[in-house]
Amino acid sequence: METILIVDDEKNYPPLLAAVLGDEGYETLTANSGLEAIQILEGSDVDLVLTDMKMPGMDGMELMERIKTRDPDLPVLMMTAYGTVDMGMAAMEKGAYSYIWKPFQNEQLILFVKQALAMYRVVQENRLLKNELGDRYSFGNIIGKSPAMVNIFDTIVKVAPTNATVLIQGESGTGKEMVAKSIHFNSHRKDAPWVAVNCAALAESILESELFGHEKGAFTGAAAMKKGRFELADGGTLFLDEIGEISSSLQVKLLRVLQEKTFERVGGVKPIEVDIRLIAATNRDLKKEVENSAFREDLFYRLNVLPIQLPPLRERQKDIPLLVDHFLQKYASGPSGESRVRKVHPDVHRLFQEYAWPGNVRELENVIERAIILCNSDAISVNDLPRELTRSVSNTLHMEGIPVDATLYETLSMVEQAMIKRAMLMSDNVQSHAAQILGIGKSGLNQKIKKFGLDFGLKS
Ligand SMILES: Nc1ncnc2c1ncn2[C@@H]1O[C@H](COP(=O)(O)OP(=O)(O)OP(=O)(O)O)[C@@H](O)[C@H]1O
Image (cartoon, rainbow, N blue to C red; front, side, top):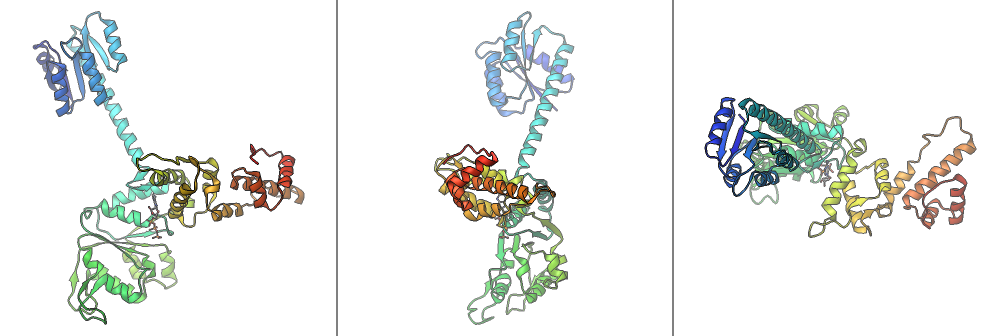
């Protein structure tokens, strides 16, 4: 039910209007001064304010201005004395939805109210939609607006409330651990432990006791009983990173835990039961590992209940500028929040789109962090990037765009031009540096630039 606040200093007027609007199914609140209206607005959810213009103390205009600073969308309908067009218009200029002359017919008032509320609903819906769209560019700290990432955000929302095992696959640095954490922190287990184990970082024997714990005296050096990560994660989520690296004997043990939901500590006989949600991740293609008999098929299917595939960064180029902005904000802010380096040069953006990003988002993050330290201006330039990156892009110089029937001379000249353009890009248009990259003299480069009619807005 929508709520209308009626404000008028003529004591008997608000109850009268409240009765009329109440008959139309609206909830009403009444006030006899602007101040009283403000107090009511602070404590209630109001959808429309209907106020008299002329009131002692705070008049309708001032009341509206105060309402607008608090909630610019809330419609205010002004009641003015008959014939005061100027005042009505002035109120509308300041943000009133409309004005109505006193005295008015009930039907007239009802029509105005209906229209104002309809408009308010549309504005509210638009705002909601915009907020939803805004959220889609990130999910917590996970940034992305490419269709693949939007899909992953949707999957996280669906998967998080369940207890099902999740298998996250993707190249190193694509954000697998971030996604796993986000599933945990969006689940009902969020206040229970989040326990992560990197299966590749530990030797087989250590990994086994790390996962399942051990009893006192289970092996030389086991001076006391130690709980494993399965027990520590009880009630929460256990994240097994690099699951593709575990040995075949550990694969068998893990399968047993998943099937029977119990395990024993190393050297122990007492079965231990825990309530955990398992999320596993790997940068290997686990299905292929199964085909090559390097990973147990039965374990693969136990893990792969809800698969999430994170695409490499080179396949979601749309996300790169967003991620760049995100890391600029993360690393460039000074102690008081201001940023020295605020953007990247357009050439850098172009280069980033072409680069293959073998280390994915982690590599991009490192590149930005390093470039901010090296950068002398407010924009990161190609010179601030690692040499391997600019070199690798220049190595991708390909034959695209060269017609198949081009003669050798035409082809060579096109390749020559492409190489010059790249060298200039890599050297941020500094000709002497570009000549060095190309392994020719500066005057030789100058001649070629003139010959091909290339325009770089040159710096020497
Ligand atoms: N979509 C993203 N938005 C913001 N930061 C990201 C995103 N993806 C990855 N990162 C950042 O990249 C780095 C690597 O992420 P993460 O550790 O989750 O990757 P991973 O796939 O688990 O890597 P590995 O396979 O090497 O363990 C982290 O610092 C993380 O903050």
